[in-house]
Image (cartoon, rainbow, N blue to C red; front, side):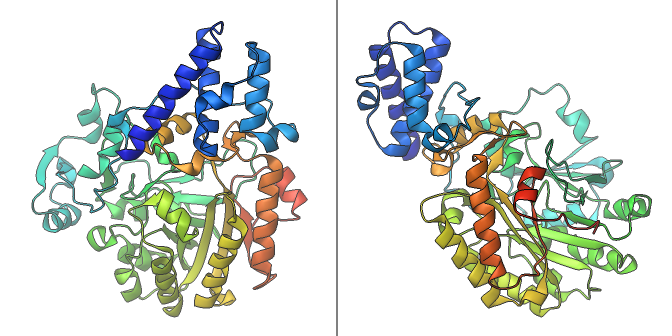
Length: 448
C-alpha cells in the first residue's frame, strides 16, 4: 500500500497547488489541470507547487503550458488534438494487493449441468479447501446483482465458475476500428486470467466476479466443422491464458488430438505461462502452434504480475520447439521507455539463441494501447506504476496510443532487429492502420 499512500499525497498536493494558484477556474477546468499537474509531478518527480509557479491564471495559457510539458513530443509534432484528461481518483480499496501471488480460489461454483463433469472433479481435487457449490446457470446467478467494480475485479481469482457453454464457441478476432485485420479467429474457451498485467484490456470487462471455464469441450468440437475455413488461424488465449491452468483443465490434450483431423487449420495456444507438461506429452500433427507473449524482464517485473519470468518462458519455448511444435511470439504490447530498443533487442537475441528461425510460425508486434476508460482502472489498481507516464494520446480508433511517429519508430526498429536473424520471418502488426503497414512496406499474412 506504500505506492497508494505516496500517490494519494501527490494527488492531494496537486489539488492544493491548483486551487491555490488558479482560483478562478471552474470545476471541469480544475479537474483537467489537476490531472496534468499530477501526471507531470509523477513522471518528472517534481513537486506540484513548482509546476504551477509562474503560469498566468488563464485557462488557455495554463492548459497550453501544461500540455507542452506533459506531452512534449506529441505537442511538437502536432499529434495532440484531443488530449484525454478524465477525473483523477485514487481509492485504497481499488489498489491490487500484489502479495497474493499464489492462485488458490476460495469458491468453486459449477452450473448444475457441469457439476459432475471431469473438469469439476479436477478443480475440487486441485483445491480441496475451496467451497464447492452449484447454481442453475451463471446468467441467473449474476442476474440482479450490481455490476462488479474494481475491488471485485481484484478478487476475481478467488472464484472459479464451471459452466456448460451452449452457443458462444468461436468468433473472429475483434479487430479495432480502421485497423488492418490479421485474419485470426478465437476458440472462445474460458474467460479471465490468473495473471495481473497492468495493460490488460480485460480490466475493462468487470461484469463477472470470477474466472469461467466451460466443461463441455466436446460441444466446441461438434460445432467447429460448421465454422471452419481451410487455412484459418484459430486459437485460445484472447480472453484468458491458454495454458495457465492446463494441469487442471486438461484442455490441451483433447484439442491437440482433435486438430489432427483438421490439418489444414493452424491452432494456437497463446500464453505467458510455462505450464507445458501435457503439451509436451501430446502426439501432435504439426499444425499446433505454441505461442508466448514476450517483453524485457524489467517490463515483466513492473507490469506482468504473477507471470513467469522471461528466462522461464524462453526455456518453455525451447522445449516446445524441440518437441516439434511451431512457435509464435507476440511482442505485444511493446512499451516505450528510456533504453527500450536495447532491451527489446536483447529479448530477440535471446529468443533466437533458444530456437531456430525455422521453428517460427509467425510473430506479431503491437504497441501499448487501450480504451480511454482503462486508464483510470490502471491508475486505481496500480498506483504509481510508470506504464502511463508515456505519451499516450487518442489514436485513429480513439484508443490511447503512442503518437504515430513513435509507433513507426518502434515497428521499424523491431523489424530491423528481427531481420538480423532472418529477412523471411512472417511478421504482422497487431491492430494498426493501413498507413502504418504501407509506410513499413508490410503485407498482411494470408488467410492462415
